[in-house]
Length: 308
Image (cartoon, rainbow, N blue to C red):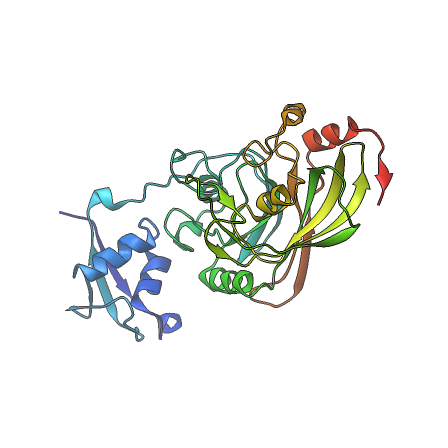
């Protein structure tokens, strides 16, 4: 006989949508799987088939059955994660370079998503399937500060803040050459590269507006260390914008195309600071992470440089 759940809606559940109620109470199944069970008629409220958006009342009896193979494919994996802050609604962590944020083509395990499941049990019901708690991302090669949602309330609020540009992200990046101005902006639209693949370009398909602000912090013989703030959040935005401007990021094997990049151990881009209001309390929050050791060492090899 397939597994079953027999649940009762309490006073705190009154007014909740059925799919939200199940996501909070049936943690062994993903949100998309729960919706599929509702749509297939395998979930009933007070003995009658229900819809995902049905609002519950105190005392409603919810029954559901599912197959054993319906358990999610994403599995918890223990991994070292530096946690800067955590409460019941969110966590702020430092992602190391080389770690993929969530499963995708060629990366089914060993992702940050699996590490979060192990570190914060219960987060599996927050957010999209196989992306528990993920409200933004960093490229595999990029290190730095990330915020993760631990409650549905925080998840919705953080996603809205990112869409409305209420989250201030500041990066440190090393680029080739010297910028013409000590500070400025790059605002060319970005779309999928016409060459295909996973690359992006300023003259790509279906371009979308993109705005990147920068300030020169230090100048070296062949490089400049910049403080970078992406106002919009397009995929590979910082890398594409600076490459198109003739100043690709050091160590960027996709957009750099510079033989000298072999001297760098990895892409020189680090999410240095993250500022945002707490999604539930509204309290202003600010977190930062210093450059990783390998980037500090690479910077040291360039010499002392000059101030901007």
